[in-house]
Length: 146
Image: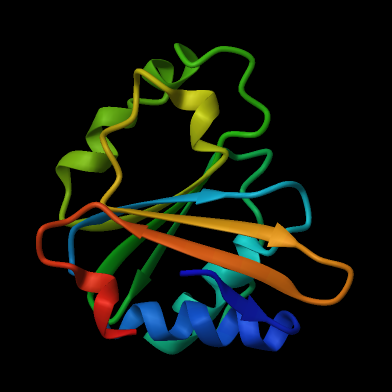
């Protein structure tokens, strides 16, 4: 079911609500064009978890690591990959074997090297606001409580 988010604050609030329902080990694919609000959503999640530092898109670093509430959160941005095989060079599998939450922007660019997502969040920018669609691939239906 699509959810309408009327501004940046609403997108951050949705990200904050994820903090309450995501398990300690989870892979979330974030889909959407540039400026759709993917990093804004992650920022809301991290703020709710207690992180007060800067949250920026890891476009150039590919991954940013955050330690919040004794939980590791990895935020990936695969936008600059030229080939999915580049993920092997950064040891991508090591990130997924940890007890961590992994947000992955532009997951289509890493196909074949990423695990199946637990949750897919698609954001579509509108003239005003955003449309968000959540697909929960778990049997636990972690998103149904939002």
